Image 1 (cartoon, helix red, strand yellow):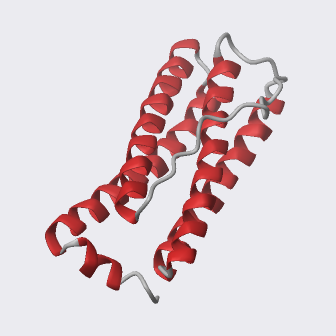
Image 2: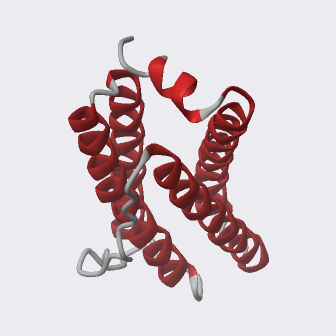
Image 3: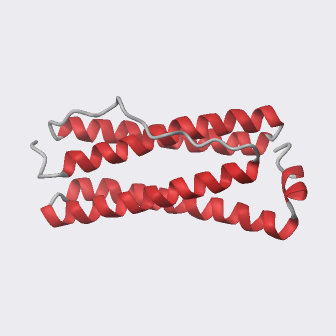
Length: 156
């Protein structure tokens, strides 16, 4: 099937963000494991796995539309010196992802590609859930203090 105008570019832009997210969440999982925060390690590992699934689906869909998946480019992977910094960078990343996905959904609706729009709408839901999770973690840290929050992250 031939892609409608601009759809492959949007899909590749989203793919770049998803592949970046995989690397970022794998790094953050490893950092949390190194720091001894088992619960956070598991959550970041889950996020990375979810992003791999999104990336795989995007690659399949790009190929279905006779496009070429751009696997050569990633955005910079955010690092942090502590858990709060990880959350802040990941929250910003997810907010940017939601914005990109919304633009891609709108474009697909405009050009009449409802299959791609449907795929991207599901990804928006996941990204908005990620935004909510990071906002909740940061709000919890504000309310109970970082030390208390982290003491709950050591074991499952």
